[in-house]
Image (cartoon, rainbow, N blue to C red; front, side, top):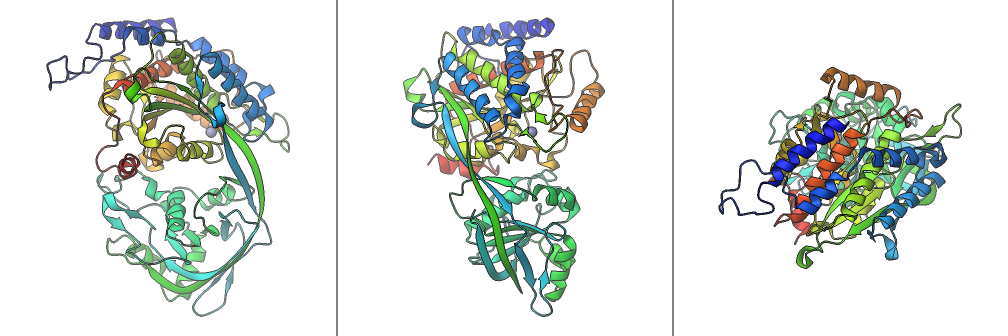
Length: 564
Ligand SMILES: [Zn+2]
């Protein structure tokens, strides 16, 4: 524990002897090859106060049974939010929520598709296919109305993607207003890193993008064809995540009356009843020259839903920047504070304490807030701290924050997010997946080096982890964003040990009541990740220019647009 702290200090002290914020000091255009962690003395002193014990105390409290699992829209979640706001106040940070408070209210809606719902595919010829819920289809009404009716043509639109940076357009200008769009999951298969990032999943492959794009174009429904290999998960996953209540932000823009999936067998039957062949359709969809095809079939649906309005809050604070002409720009730190609350129907321990997920991220966020807030000097740009809600409901709190940022997205230079940073001891690796897609990456590499942390690459980019935590909500509105976490190699242990810890956590504790605080947890790694993020944030807040995405990245266009 102490050993690690000493190593970090030693390495940072060394770099302090290098030029401090002297951008041209090495002789104009020739920037030094190995950039250093260029922290002014006061910042370095603040960084050194970041302590594993401070993080421990926050985690201990936030994951206590009394907080009832910090459920979104529940008492325990609200208590956690109040605790976080109180800490922000104590650190001298300014409120950056609604009406001069730390709270940004997030309007949420719970949608349950009721059994009265009817869902029929009417082929060109032959009998109507009245589908069975959960076995053959799942659907919910994104318009958040208690009842909606759909009777519309079905158009097959391949993958349902328009991606200018990959020169790909499934729609080809087809007017899909008022139509129901049948589409494939995932994205055109590729080994070429320049085409949909090769094997890695891009946002275009996620079903959320497909729904959003269809709604933007005025379609009233989407039917996704489930295929296990393409989706990378079986039908059971689709069924489970679409049964019961789903949460969403209160709808603000265009939305689908029917957002649905059908089983592969159903898709095959529909295709052949329309005189087509699903395998051939899937093949055709892989071509640049694909054009939408009207199946000559209709979807007739009567959607009946239970709609429950509720509310939660993001907790947002700001440290104003020291330099007037860039103080309207900011770095933001994020971590979600919600977890699953209490499951009253569950026997035994039914409190989802969420110690690792994500009291640890909150502890780090609060420790960063304290270090910045109490530093003798402030960075040039402002620093925002946001503890977001409803992550476990589908990144909803951060989605709302991205749509309603306290500072315009185009003026936020970087988001650093923390989610589930395990208290396992001193890390020798850091994970920063997505950082390599930003113009900030050279600084990240240099800082990792200063901290003696090897950057561990994403082991399974095809799983699309980048799209599954809160930084992604901010990337979507153009902000260069990534999460910081430990890798698998810890001091005094083999990599196999780290992988074992991960495996055991996923199997036994992830999203279960047993994700709890234990006194023997070692928060030195959380502290190291906080220090690493502090150095990165300070640097980002001080660079001459705002950070951007690499040329050709899928978020580049929205970034540029946000800065016009
Ligand atoms: Zn989680």
